[in-house]
Amino acid sequence: MTDQDQRTVGVTLRLPVELADALKNYAFVTETSGNEVIKRALVEYLKVHGRTDVVRAAFEKVLDQHAIALDKLKDL
Image (cartoon, rainbow, N blue to C red; front, side, top):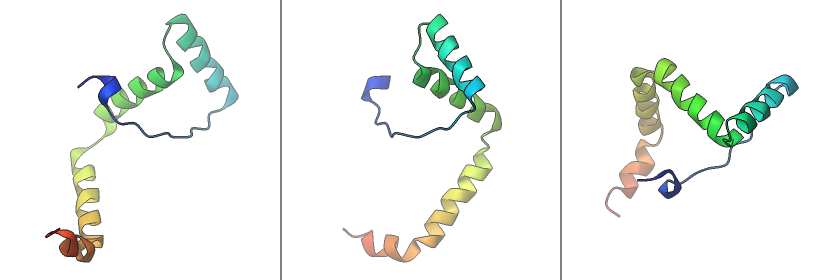
């Protein structure tokens, strides 16, 4: 699956002026979009800091919170 085939969602991000300027400059110098720079940085951050156990716990919490609705939908 290519990047263009993946579904996307818009996210608003507020940055300090200096950081936004640094992003624009880096994107310009590397001929990369600011979106791509942020996306790559986020992927790298999550590789280091994203913990499987935390994600799993969040998933289990959602399943528990929506158990009744999910049970009603299981046979559709």
